[in-house]
Image (cartoon, rainbow, N blue to C red; front, side, top):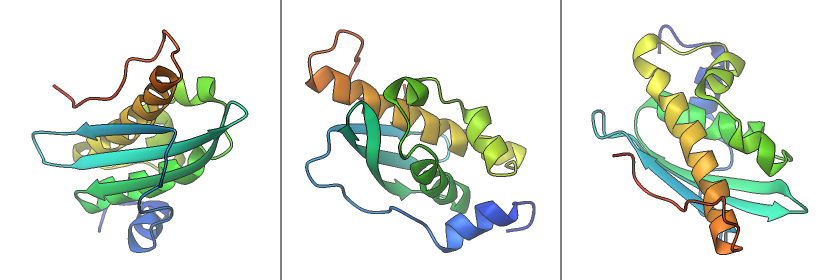
Length: 135
């Protein structure tokens, strides 16, 4: 795993929050058809904040590491903050990603935003667009 920060390696070797979140309030799924990476993020919301995050990822070490890192990063965040999360913020907070692995931080940010949108759609909020695949 040359070229990866210690934090990326740590989250790949010891991922956090992996698995299924039963009765999730929102689910976001994203995939990259070029490399085949797939992420599913499940959130529980309490008082307008992310109370719990679980994820399932099939992909490269960077995809697994960004899933794990992002799940810890957004815990306790207000939903508006998750909606404004960028791939750059995830990659920077992880100490950077190799250029050919930045798409993993894109998937993590997009899947988290999709989970918030799904939560809002389920609650009847007009801003929620639901979940879906990357075209």
